[in-house]
Image (cartoon, rainbow, N blue to C red):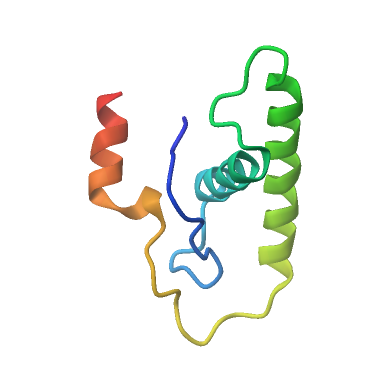
Length: 91
């Protein structure tokens, strides 16, 4: 599932905790921004997917190792927004 968001939102301190899907979506957005590639061509798909997997794993380790937040993040991750979920269910 591909989700495009304009900004990467904070995942630390979410209640309930960030899901694997939310972490992977943030990783995918990061790789898109850094690479300048929204949809990789056949020649780049392996490198793109490997980068997403590595950033996802690193983000999961980071979130697991950080101390809890006192307050939840100010923004709601895209996958928790009803309008985004509705749009994804139509595709």
